[in-house]
Amino acid sequence: VLRGVMAAPGLAIGQAVRLVAEEIVVVETGAGASAELAALDDALCLVRDRIEASAAKGDAARKAILGAHLAFLEDPELTAAARKLIGEGKSAGFAWRRAVGGYVEALRGLGDRRLAERVDDLVDLERQVLRALSGEEETARVLPTGAVLLADELLPSQLMGVDPSQVAGFATARGGPTSHVAILAAAMGLPALVAVGAGALEIADGTALILD
Picture 1 (cartoon, rainbow, N blue to C red):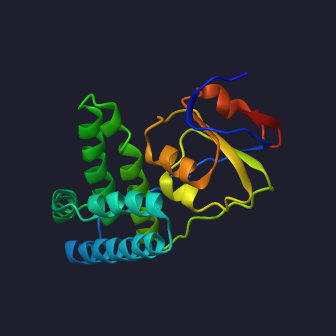
Picture 2 (cartoon, rainbow, N blue to C red):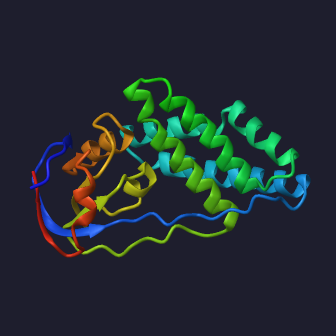
Picture 3 (spheres, rainbow, N blue to C red):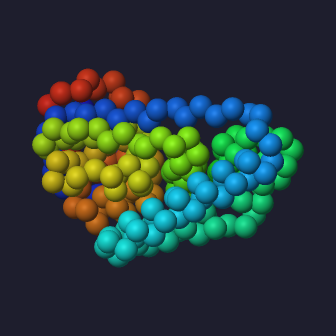
């Protein structure tokens, strides 16, 4: 028995499926400021287009969350921090990761739980932009029908990328009940528990689970 915090109500019965986010490796040294700036601009435009396309076909909750993502993506201070690092010889990927990391530290340091939960949105954008820079697509995992997803934390784009008809619910080791993933889960009708602890990551794939 693992206890957590209810993020979205409901009962889910299904097979455990663990989701592990692959680490994206970036090189520190750039190939010239002009090339790296162009690469960053192209990646930002690509991610912006994808977010806008996803928001156009989503419900109110999805549109609101993606609107917040766009606001972060278009924050002039964030992009300026990345451009400054590129001007110092860093690669676009390294500069973007470092700039986002500065924002993450600032939010966590405010001591406000709700603002700290916006960190997931920034981490989500970091991954999306780094994927765009690398030219790699996020690999969609084939899920068994009625899967109960288990993860350290789920990012909003990860949850939006699953087929709700295949997922019975999810539980995460970390996270909070007011995060955007929690809001999405409620809008999608997916029972969800957060802050379950490390025990959620010790459950083997295929284990029969009851999430209540």
